Amino acid sequence: MLLLCYNIKYLKLEVGVKHVDLDAKTRLYMLLGNPVGHSLSPALHNAAFLALGMNCAYLAAPVEHDCVAHALNGIRALSIAGANVTSPYKETVIDYLDQVSADAQIIKSVNTIVNNKGRLSGYSTDGPGFYRALLESTGFYDPAQPVMIVGAGGAARALAYTMAQKIKGEIYIVNRSIEKAEMLSELLKSNTSVNQCHVVALESDDLIFATSKCPVIIYSLPVDSASFINSLRITRPHQEQRFLFDLRYSPRETEVMNAFNKVGGRSFNGIGMLFWQAVEAFELFTGEKAPIDIMKEALDD
Image (cartoon, rainbow, N blue to C red):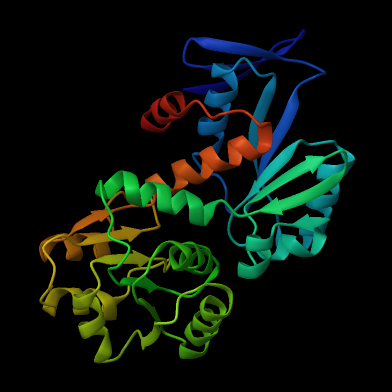
């Protein structure tokens, strides 16, 4: 349990039975987005700070769309040590940063900002975080097998880019807007070694074939797609081991996950990706190795 306890002399950050006093030397980290009230990131990072005895605190800050520039300037003005960025601002913040990593620039998505004496550098830990979650969840992964990515937004770009660097097989991009899917396909072919990238309309007969062919499916849409669920219900999988990753972590089991389980697959929600991208971000923030076991305990709580 995470509490901020106020009294006249000091602030106290309390996680379980442990606590650290917050004072004038406390380094502050933030989560920027809208909404952020549901986020588990503060629990993860504060548990890690506490475990390592670091005088740091992590808070969530809802930011209105017309205040993004003010929020980034505020990071500089208040010497906030770093920030994570969540929907819908992962692309918007790029315009206000001093430096952006090559990968984040390619996918046009930043979820981690490090403040070095007023100079703000942006990174994306979503893709690497997802890949670590995939390896942990499946226990194995054959990079020669085809992968399907449902969606073509910011999260899809980050994950598709990482997967295109890791795999040797085909990638299928499924999206309602073919134009956006083709843009993502061109991004992958221009910036990675992947050369077999297929675009599939979300509401087409080709979806059934692609769904049955791909043993790994990454679902990045914000809502359950009736068309995709229908394709799962009538598909006849060619593989014994099939995995679906729904990037949402609320609810714990989505309709898409449930439909996939019913046809013999194994599904995972976005908790794993959330956890491992936070681990990667923590290490960028601090330069320290993240206390993984402690962070997992905080996530379980």
